[in-house]
Image 1 (cartoon, one colour):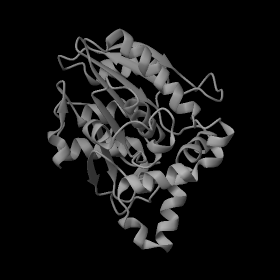
Image 2 (spheres, rainbow, N blue to C red; image 1 turned 180 degrees about the horizontal axis):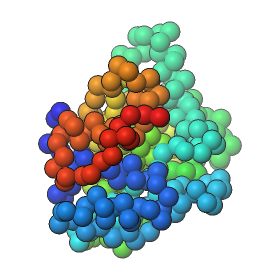
Image 3 (cartoon, rainbow, N blue to C red; image 1 turned 120 degrees about the vertical axis):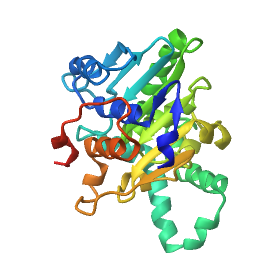
Image 4 (cartoon, one colour; image 1 turned 90 degrees about the vertical axis):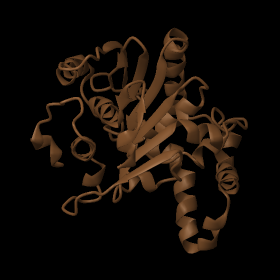
Length: 280
């Protein structure tokens, strides 16, 4: 796979998938897991900030952790794990999903340039904008932006700034990441696209596609339905999901990690339990 050659600040796609996978772990275990996985390497990660929603469930919280080395800072955002977070996905991407369904009835709409489709999405969200005095904010996007701004204030001038996530976490990583000019790589594992959706949000509507395409990296399975939402942007790598997996299982994070290591090689000598390679 072409993405096997992708690197930034001596980190590769295997590292990115691992960071996204660990975001589903209780925060107390993340440091232990990082030490175990990178024990035989020259990379030393320091856990500097985190918020766990497993024990403090409340609307508006985003589960993430932040780690650093001497020259890199990574913010990893967890995807959907709690029931109400499914509604967060719908809240952010509903217009794009509806537009894509309409395009099935009117296939010629797929010929529209991206900027036309983005304008249509923005007009479709007019009710929300009217309710919010013309500015459409999304609580979860704003929460992540606030986190990234704090990280940027401390590390932005001295560290390569990477944001990564899986599913909802991948979409939030891209939407919040493009709002800052200082992020270097925004890596989405099985997340929805943002080509259309970014145009409806107050925080990201000003960002041009050139800036978005330059920073975003997308990795997902061919039968995973979540990345079908919106249009993907930037670097896109499609993987083949095993025929024995269901569409939902193709979205599962641990098997993706196993597949990436299998396809790209285990350059870090990660010790991965083979039992996690099969979806539950």
